[in-house]
Image (cartoon, rainbow over all chains, first blue to last red):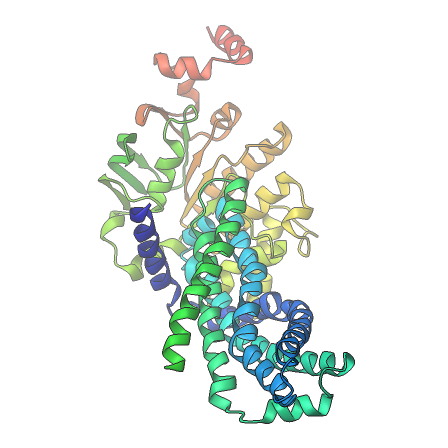
Length: 250
Length: 251
């Protein structure tokens, strides 16, 4: 098992050296990247919107429930605590975990299907660097669009929190907005989350692509690769979250 | 001309190719036949450079494949057309986009020239009117023709076909054979075809190689194969009732 793990790391490294090469034709690379942004990014906006609004609402309700027992704590602290939770962890990490499921399985299954139907062999026979041609646009699309999705998720999470607080009578909408602005530090609250989102984008794109690109066998193996892509991406996100949190906060 | 010299290839403990020597001549259709598991596909992929041989060498017009520079290898790839068993067409592209892909990737043609070339190649393989269809919307025979059209779009010097007739009805199989025959002689290509189809052997086999258990056991042409006294060839060729009757008629 340990040998397999290190072999896998080595094979992943070798694949990435093939992926990060100068594209054969920039025009085709540009077209593929735009297509991937549509498929992997824009098509994920719906789920990110729903997830973020409700996540913000739930965090606000939970925080209000924890703080409401103490009359000495001002209510805007609910908003402050919600902001910290949303921008530091929930938006970058939880949304990326969800995207690892949606986008990761899509990448692995599409590449796996191309592998078992010999489409990747066809590219290789033509002299195309198939790894770079197929995987690089997916990773670049992720790197470009994931931070935007996370930024949008932060905004919608905070908006959802303020709306829920107001609707349930926990904290007035305007007070939430004031709370969000209190001791707001751009690096700590936004850049920190965006740095994480870039790393997670790289993980989702590359790990899922590795799982799909290296499939051997048929339809069953493509399904297994798709599951592996989600599991491995999620594990890598959690582990890197631990490392990044330590590095960025200390 | 392509030459295979003493090709050995193993996968872990499985010795698939055990020293194959063959010369494939230009302007000829070279058919590789043999039972499933005889090493035909591995041999074809080794010639293509998709597998690296454990021993031996492949020469393309005198140049050793394994000793080519990356740049030369890339150019060689563009001189090769390949028709895969399942077609290997890109699902997300239309028929015209599939054929156009190698041109967009490697040629210096203008948009108009590419359009003209795609139209010419589609007409050549009799695919008129299928431009905007996706591979999933066309029949198996049409998919094979699209695959051939894509393979010849760059005007290759070498054409490889892996079981081009598998899964096709006899009539369509004959059409595909005729197409491969016409294109090979028209463009003076070195064509190598892996097949199980004895009709193809008799129809278009300029040069036939019979493989068994990773070795070349017989070599000849389509007219010689029916008269072969090689026990392995006889057993393979005259397995069906039809060919048994053909043999009796010949005698």
